[in-house]
Image (cartoon, rainbow over all chains, first blue to last red; front, side, top):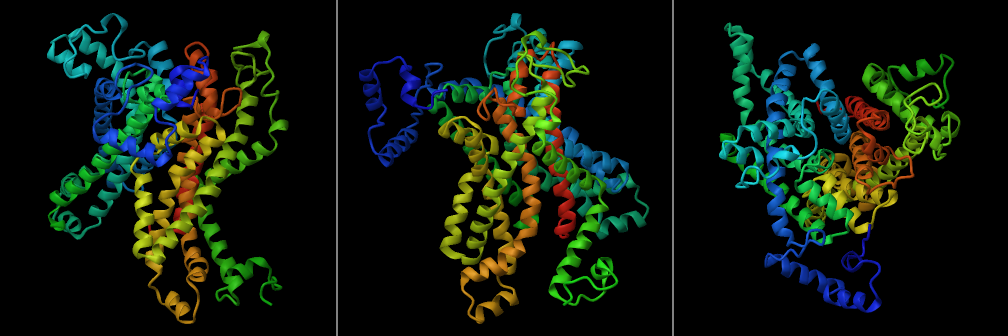
Length: 304
Length: 304
């Protein structure tokens, strides 16, 4: 893997003159602060350079690959919330009993398991042996580019085109990567839900409601309504964490998204790709954190 | 001298109701902490796995049944058997022996990251917390920059700049991990800096360096230990992820993530090539999580 950006462009067979010319054209003969200044200027004007691997401007490439990741991450978040939150509630309601232990153990394993390995195992079991899911990519080979590319998200495009065959095939392909990607957020959300619920269930209003004869289910509903705000902010944070997992999950499942684009850029020594992708992830991550803070301030009346 | 054990023996000395000296008091605290730790079977299991990892790493050449690098093309891709417990890989290397030797690399990563990250974060955090003002603001903005990116993506960017390889992966992981420790140490420092004993020592003329090193750092140690154990679980996963992407330890090396990556091409028909290194990663990561949770219950009673 070439780390020298000039070698990445001209190849290691190039003569010295070509090397020098490209070296100069990239501005590498300038002092570092000047180079950094040029870089900042380029970014401010929206010029992120060209990807060596594809020959397109990086920003165009990202526009092309990002919807695939967005689709995957959104589905993963959905799975994380739908599974993680009820598990956390159950653990809190039956604190210290077997559901609590099961959920805590599940959370610990979710944090400790290498997801790319879990993905590989899932491919062996559910794809190679059981044939329940599709293999690499977003759709089977025969269905690539069958529906017109409107949003870049294959599920949405298939629905817009009313092509149910593609939709079914795409679902078969996305379900496993989404579930694997969801394990971390599932573990995280169940843990947070559990501690939020425990805090509420220890409050006096819960005791009062219980004494007045409200069922366990009714009390849980009351308590759950009160953790909704905290939960929303945590879910937003979990969304950001999914970007991290997407890099490895996409590599395992051949998902043509942002993570795979970043990895292939890395392996090719394509610094424009690496820098732009990292910057983009940073911007998204910070925005989501900010959004989480803002949501907390606006939704929780006590912080006004 | 109460440091020597009295006639009643160590046990009585450790459990005496009134400690006769500071040494005895400290020893008693450790002893009771240890007893409390022993009551948590999961945490003890975690500690046992980590100790076992150490033993396996030290005695790897004796525990392994084969040379981890020895190729035997006649016996390649053999399933697990009495001769090769975990089977053999595509060039006939014994996977059990490679997993055993891989423990050395895992331990090397964990140890190196821990001794870089914990002291660095502790120092920066306590200085920022105690100094306050501009120093605090500057150091905390620095941690913000690092915390603005999800861990793996930032580590990838550092590896892109430093070049692939085991040592560079360690540096990249350390760079992404220290800000968490700095934040933690700063928070602890803010709690103790205004306490009376710190004021007393300042009035007696102790220098800021002495106050930070002798009176503040010791108060942060317990939570830093807990954090270190919990972080190592993530560090192992990130290191394995980098190895899997081909950016960490390089292929002939028996690093677990790199083994997974080479086993990936043979995934469908030769499951044992990916199964065993993945299990090893999960086991060690889980052990650090369990140990960290157990240590937190003992050392940091405030949380949960």
